[in-house]
Amino acid sequence: MNSIDKLSEIFSHFPGIGPRQARRFVYYLLSRNHNFSEDLIRAIENIKREITQCSSCHRFFTKNGSPSTLCSICADASRDSSLLMVVPRDIDLEAIERSGSFNGYYFVLGGSLPILEKEPEKRIRISNLEIRINKDWEKLKEIILGMNANAEGENTADFIKEKFKNLDIPFTTLGRGLSTGAELEYADPETLKNALLHRSK
Image (cartoon, rainbow, N blue to C red; front, side, top):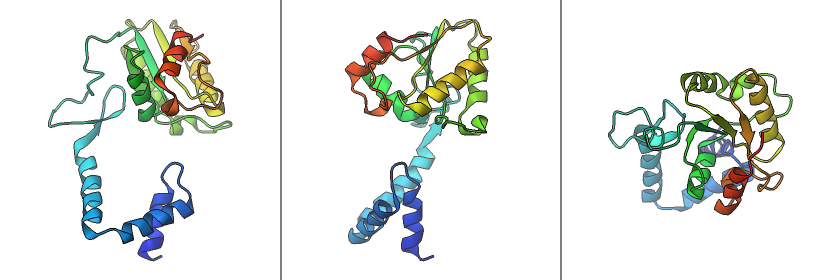
């Protein structure tokens, strides 16, 4: 495998990128000057050095030289500790934050569950979620399942509800201000506000 094929294969693993799009990325890089490639290499190296994962919600955040293992959201004592929203990915958390409609804390699952998934524990951070819920047990009054409005999102929500069915904490889901099939990262702030406002058990 030559270097063009290798880099194309790497790009093809990116979400939503097929083989042809991946190859176009490679030829675009080849058409740019040397400084562009150097900047890209440095940016990739820096992101590994400067970004870490929050020990509480598992989102990625910039360390900025701080020794803290908590992101700015989890370290903010002014937020509502009785509310925990579970979202599939970091980008979904960012979409909710931009809407300005939620002041509780988050947990990032790291993905969602396809229908008929045989090993859900390997696809999402369900054991980490269990640890988080047990840690905050006395404070929590509601756990909001902020899943995408599609089959995988609903399957993930159903799995979590079943997993924690014996807990004396209400699990709610986002209201259908979200269109069926919609992903949180593409929803506008007003839609997300309505989905949170009209969440249901």
